[in-house]
Length: 305
Length: 224
Image (cartoon, rainbow over all chains, first blue to last red; front, side):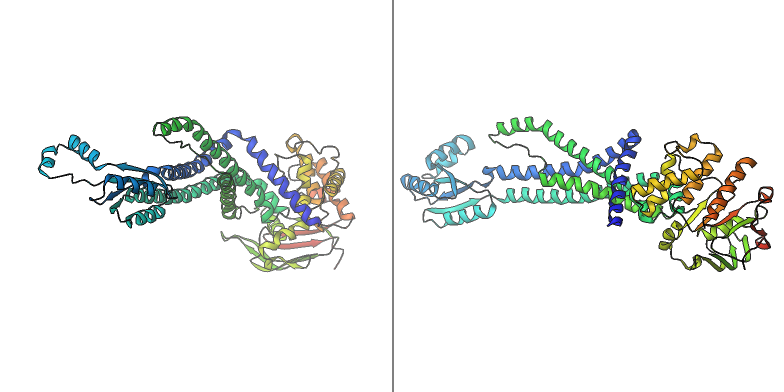
């Protein structure tokens, strides 16, 4: 019980002592912490960017619109009925009918093939319906398209989800790249902390030597350095969080304006609570680990002479 | 308490510091280790404090064979040992109190126990009331006494000192030696390396003389 209390008292005093040590050299500590902050802010910011892009691509309802071409012999009245029938489905948000006569007129005016069209007898264009599904999920869209394809009036359903799929694939790739960057920059954080701790160990070699001489165990000697690493990592993570959150705060209004111009209510979202927790804990753990590596490597070398 | 059996110590550079040293110290002995500089006095003390290990032979401290002790057991071993250095080896970024308290903190003494023992140790070396001072503001003699207080604060079984009066004038040196005598009177086994023969001339103690890595004299021996 006493040993346990002693253990916790040592931890507390090391924990506070390490903080005091950082405060005693504000400039050097600030530089280290800033480097760590940037190394942590980069993957955090990229992650937020990808997740926002994800959210944005989901919010693009238009991405899922598809076109239904009705059979040529379907009359205008029947086409309107079909449109209404489809629109009444639960999974459909809206249906727009493109009347074949209106389409022909538009085509004649815009395409420059007017004379070629005159050579044909009658209107070669069918009635068309532009269907906007409620869900943007590819599987839902395809299920809806298949259902409409079975209607007797339907000639052809043209779903162009390929580009959405491509965008999704690109975002998945970007996410994977961010994962890689996170690993590399996390390693960088551990190395930066490790190097700082190595210098700290060298500058405190007398203290380490004396402590070993009066019977200090490896754990006793290592602990202050581990806490130093922990604080460096945690402080870096806090600043990284502030950088990312501040950046989003600055970008928020122009993004909202831009989204409004496209008729969207899209707004940037920042780091969620769990993500913030991961960032802070990750920084602290990386700092601790970097310090642990440096301590394991360099403390042994300092022996009483 | 301390036993050397045919101990050799050769450093990696090939220099042989000890060549076949054997002696025995009982619990409560007070022994001076004399001899010219370079005779191997420091090496002998380093073998006791496990700063070095013997190349050959056996060093027993408190019935523990130091040559075979695994690295992880060294801290606990050193906690039972008080060591005083010629250059004090104080930590100058800490107060006198924190310096003396260091071995107690390591050993896990409670806060109250630590304060009590630090006060007692400083009292014994005549530095009562200097707890909050920085070591650098003290004289060399006072710093040496802080070093001694740190060595005796955890109440070690054995106290070893390497030229503890090396940098002190004769008057201060006598004071320091008297300090060691007092610790010995309460049962601590004391071994002091010194080249200052004038200083110990009047002290009734056993003297081990070391010359060129070998024991060349053992006088004033009281016990077998």
